[in-house]
Length: 134
Image (cartoon, rainbow, N blue to C red; front, top):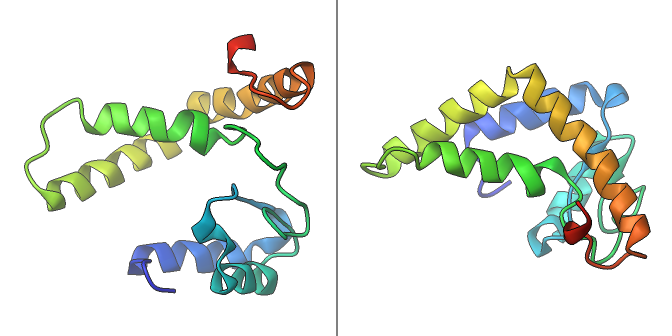
């Protein structure tokens, strides 16, 4: 798939081999709805959550995944704590921070538990904006 580097492709293939234990989840970004993406997910995963997936992603659902409400924010903060020299340095910093984050049990635990709280807030807000309730 265009846009993926070799490392990304390896990760996706590893995930696909472990498909019995994984439910893939993504939001409704237009690029996630591309035919090539949906075909890949249908072929490689028993279940996936997203637009036209085996489980539909809730429409207009603001920030319900840890990647949206937490991971990207944390990574961006950590990466830009020090000045970035060039694109190669930026890529290296992003990879380093994802590696650190992926081994941090407390971060993963907290981010996962935050999902429960966010879904509760969505229900309380009747499906409308909810972040003011957190």
